Length: 233
Image (cartoon, rainbow, N blue to C red; front, side, top):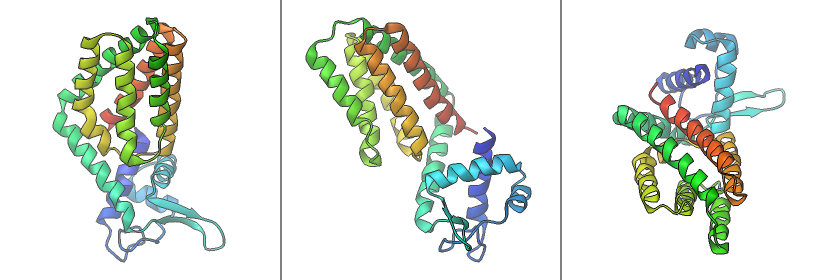
């Protein structure tokens, strides 16, 4: 979580800086202080700082430019939307408190079990086609539809389990986490990782392999849980 702390301190520094500070919100376009200076100011190691800057660059808060006047620069004020979104997600996570841990544990047990159960079912051609279609739709990079399509895939897997009780419970826990998941700023590397996990889960279900289906879904739920629990600080 060191890089996470570095990202938060870098965001805090940017928000606290005045309009004339090159790393402040202002109109954007300024360059943050040199690495050694910024690491000392934020009281983090240079390794942590590099990781944090890399994550913030990927999230759209910073941009790198080449050439004689190149370097790493703060993006314009529109980038503050992502910072505000992250802050909102952290507030939601803290409001949930222990209920968040309970929901994440419940989700891990339910969804991995549903995936394993679905892999034991003799799915019809329409059911298999529906899973594949939901998987394809969940790969979208449009933030407006990504969360909805992601939920639909998980609910399709729950339905494929053949248990109405399991499907209803998964729908309930998805609803409990929906606002929090929707508030998290999206990073491309996280999406790529999630897409790969989704694909392995569906492939295992279609191949009739409950062990792999369960394991892959557990890893997917664990990755999401780590991200959400990280918001608690």
